[in-house]
Image (cartoon, rainbow, N blue to C red):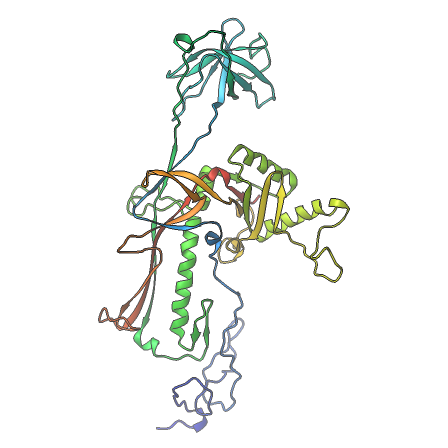
Length: 479
């Protein structure tokens, strides 16, 4: 039975096209405030103007790319990655206390802590610093207690007066060895015996997590043609809507591969920590073992304080700054203020500030002291669907990542190896590569693995992030 009137009939065709017998039209009944009109009424002779392509109002929506810029990916075959990092070369102790000894000597007690022992020998020369008032004193060690519950050593200040008399505090002192002083013809036996120092490595570990996602579409929907032309970030094109859904699932999963490495946390819940141990991501590693700059406002004073701290760490010459928009603009303003009077003129602009050239109000790199910095925006910190939605107290506003590689001892290989400071390890063997797996199940879309009238697209990866020498990283947090 034909529809009346005839112009309202819907006649299927094999290709997506607009015909007088095959179109959808606009329902002009009004949907109310915030409710869009919809295609519903077929008894309308006027053909609407249809834009087949979607408008990309959010541009490229993917967020990954950070780890590709600063790191690498390497396979592994275990449930855990263990690496060792070198400790400092010279002997020093923080938080020591002092008391008057016999005569003008002073006894310095080293606080007991895991992995801390007294390795200062008799005849070592030391510097004692008082951070509270800036005073210092130098002396020679006359006695040292090794292996005691409260390790301590006695020094004779070179001034002939005790540390207390010289105005040093009783607690919160720092001491370090700068050499030794022996009498002529002396030997290192008996009371003069030196303490042999064996290097101690600090070990760290991380475990991979299994990341999964899935997209399911029924067999009927795969054969249904839509009127919207699908076009996605990975180049998918066509009128089959499920192609867009599958493509976006893949893109979202690829973003998760990076986001999980950045945001990952170790699971401390006793009931689930063995089945779902979690993994330590970049932010967690820096907050545990690195440097956190809170309430950071880009200005030369604060930035120079960061440089002084980097001097006490590895002093890596080249570094990358990955920043959100507000912090990046703050750096530009800071550099512009400094640069405006440099060499008698402004340093803004391209091609020697020619009046015909575009004005460049941003900086991609700069050098301060002995350090080079390369600045770039981090989309993950700007996107409103992720961390770009929050700015303010304790919000993460950027990260400083050292460039280059570090030397570590690999427990599996049994040798020293060079690795990027930041890199991903993924599970792989000769039989299975779990870096980024995808497979089809069901009975649709080329798969014939079950009686299910659907196509199941599965995604899986097993990986973890290794943050080596985290003491050289800086995490910027908002005020």
